[in-house]
Image 1 (cartoon, rainbow, N blue to C red):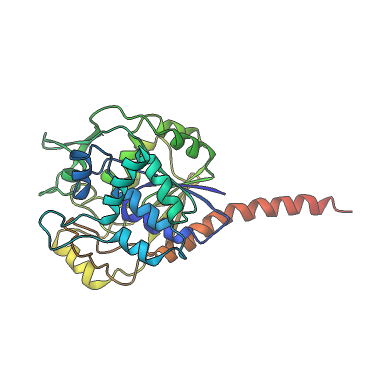
Image 2 (image 1 turned 90 degrees about the vertical axis):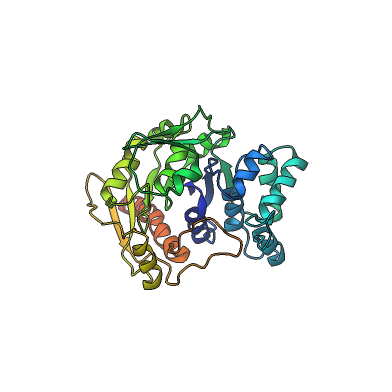
Length: 343
């Protein structure tokens, strides 16, 4: 069964970690390449390469659990207590070096896939260097994923696009075309999910695809993106970019850890109101999907991260149940058909 995940960031890694144990799944992740904050800013500006952090995270998420633990720790190590290296991961530096050795970012990805015994494909959504542009309801405009992701004050985005055309990397459209299921989310709406849909031909291929679409909702609101919005409003925005309705929506109804929840409230964030309804072929699935323990930040990580995340085991279980829901339905029809004509 061909499963395609479109996104990037921590949300995508949680999904991949939850699904990789199922050997009957052919996993492909299409990774956003518009991140320009933190270590990625140096990668883009100094080395002229596309952002590597989300690719690095996907490699580790899909790595064989039996792979060398020391190598995994090295790849994820983040420098701290250093003015020049603080915030950088060794994995990003290794990927820069491997890109130089192999002659391309794609070559570096393939080499690290072999080193970590990755089962699945990691596909950059585009190899074109582009930046995100957001226009707001107050008439202002911001260029750059990092600035859109961490605004000082909340404003509503009214127009969202790339600063230039971006061609889909050759493997992207092929993956979408062969997909049985396409998963979107979890992740920030405007800086993780939608950037991929802005790349040329992506949404057109999704609309033509016979794959079932699954959307995994976020746990909390996000300043500058989904604050003061409901789940229905967010889904409506996503579908307006897709040009197509999703088939399944996975919504958390589990209890969020209190300490982390209170920190979000102090920052002005809130649980997203669940005002979604089944209908027109769409199924809303409400389950406990949240990780029970608050996430601790890694030393040297200076970017603002989510302290509340989905649980990979819970998420993987529910997604696998969706995949088998339709598969079992087909088997029941076939068994009924052949059983009726049995001698």
